[in-house]
Length: 140
Ligand SMILES: [Zn+2]
Ligand SMILES: [Zn+2]
Image (cartoon, rainbow, N blue to C red; front, side):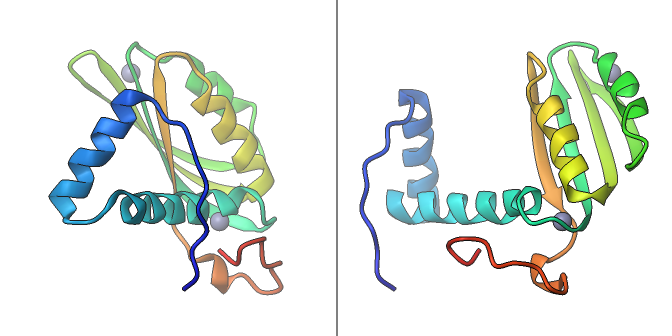
């Protein structure tokens, strides 16, 4: 497989974490970055290619998050099942979301922008199973 080189700048802390993970896995930095990027692009391609999507969203916040329930009410096109729990000071919400991918993308981007929160998006189906989907650039 041909490789392309390009320079990127990342925070010092992230670079240190990259070194730790690379050493633990016995891989070089480029391989770890390629693995991470491949996974991220596969997940986020669900936001680019219009389809009927089913995904899990894990949402973890430093504070009690009261906005999410009101936010969910504004997305009638989505079927959302919510699990809400706490660990220490963290408010954790696991959301099973089904509906049009463009609506899920909008919902997810609002969750991801909430201050003091982290959001992870995990599609529960393979994009290659979607009939007639367009191949995104790069063939992810
Ligand atoms: Zn999807
Ligand atoms: Zn909570």
